[in-house]
Every structure is written in C-alpha cells, then in structure tokens.
Image (cartoon, rainbow, N blue to C red; front, top):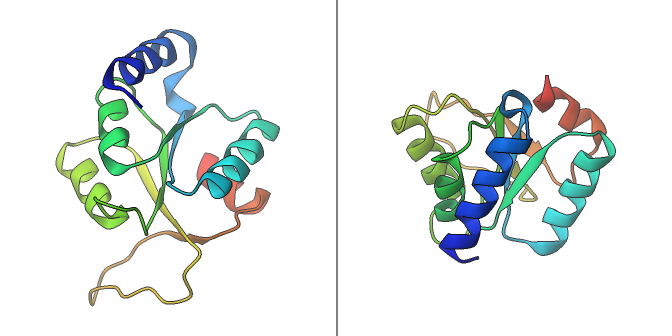
Length: 129
C-alpha cells in the first residue's frame, strides 16, 4: 500500500471512527486477515488492517487504537519487535499476539497475551472489552 493511500485511510478513520474502540490487525496472511476482518465486522467492531509492522506504525501515528492484534510471524519486522516499538513510542494500545504456531519461545519472566488462530468470537470479545 502506498504511503499516500495509508495517510488518506488514517485521515478518514480519524474523522469517521470513534478511536477509543478501534482495533488494528497486523496480519500478512490474506486468508487469516480476511477471517479476522469478517469476524470483527459481524461483531460491529471498527478496525483497520496493516500487512506489516512498518505499515502498522504508519497508521498508529495518526490514529489511537484500543488494541492491536499482531501476528507473531510477520515478515521483516517481527510481531515482538513491533510490540516493542509500540511500547517505546508510548502508544496506549493493548497488545495481543495471534499465532498458528504450536511452539512459542519466550524469555524467562516474559508475559504476553497469545491467542491461537483461527480466532473465534470468544477470543475477540476478550480483546474488545
């Protein structure tokens, strides 16, 4: 997605969507992204989709997101690296990781919110609270 279209999307979102309950999905897999967006639309949850960590950070400069659903296995900037950048920038966004992997290696003492793919209504309702 071109930077200009990302900026136009962010501007439109800022004007038309209540930012306090806006979610951002950061997912590179088209099928998983489509399923997540459909589930959120069924629950009337406003959301934006970014295909990479870099695109997510561009959107986050313009819009306050209530929560972020971040794929752990993003190409380029990993999901964990994106979460670290979000925290470093001081964004007040609840972070949830999504993964289809059965093994996740965490540092000792590290606690993160992980939701398994495919995500159903119960998992999303917890995030939306």
